[in-house]
Image (cartoon, rainbow, N blue to C red; front, side):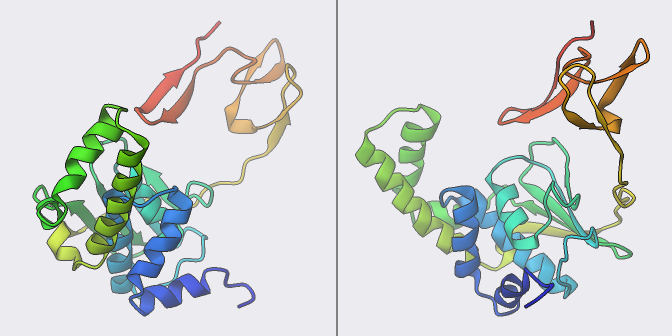
Length: 232
């Protein structure tokens, strides 16, 4: 539908098409895994409670507490992303997310400490394969393929469960950031590249990007948030 690019996704949410949403989220994430399925499951449950579509205009926001697979499931289903300023990242290392519509109380979903028991007994081989292939970066190609196949089966099992079997769900008051401001851009005197005005520094009356100016900047990778660079 014109002007509503997420209309098909919203219809899948309303219709409870959990596996189809998981399939699409896996295309974004690159593979199936329980963490991705948890993100999809929580997001469907939260949006259905809000009964509100997301337009990418910061009307609905999610605060995620981890940068693992869970967050990709959240981004796909909710449409809340870093790019549209509707995803807030708190580097707490918890598989949890708070879903909130502006003007209302939020819903915090935190994965239950015993959630893995919901699928571990059904897929006993998966843990061993995950350790060998992912944690130890070992195992044969056959092990990797078998693990990926089992991960898809587990993911479809997890996404089909009721949310309260997997999460502690709590209504919470949330302090949200203001709507994202629109900043001017400047051209760095060093590299000649355009840069957001809030990410420039001034030296001798000239504006530089953080790299050319030798200033510090934040970087997010698989280990979490880090401060990079050194002041000159």
